[in-house]
Length: 156
Image (cartoon, rainbow, N blue to C red; front, side, top):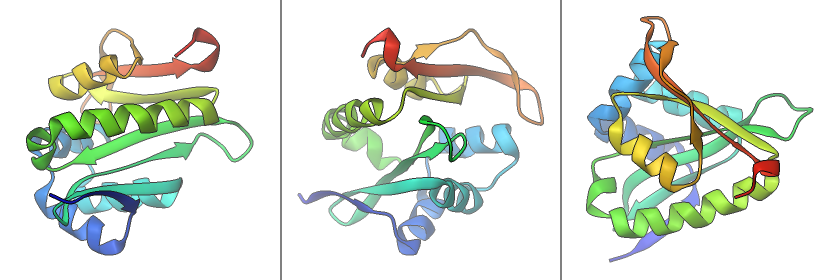
């Protein structure tokens, strides 16, 4: 089994846009009425770096951190995945914890929102040490989302 984390390419975006897990498709639609390809293109283009997790040359996930503004060290972490993330969960979690530890060093604050229906992502965010707020209406349909955040001065 070959495992790699490499810079994201257009081919990765195309593949994941067709294989994205249902929970992520529902979340990006609820957040912005975005389709998978558009959400991936936007995320990659807004991030200083975007990476693809591969397992046997298949895209497991694409992730990155967009900056709130070019003048701050505050970031918006994001990750979208295929169903392969569940089959590779042990490796995925270990690598993700390492990557998250590194980005926490680069940004004083990380913040984004997660769809409350996306229970696996919520468990994962808590495991990574993010603080989650209670659900509030978010996005065009005002569905419940939780803001998640990490502040460097809070530790982690």
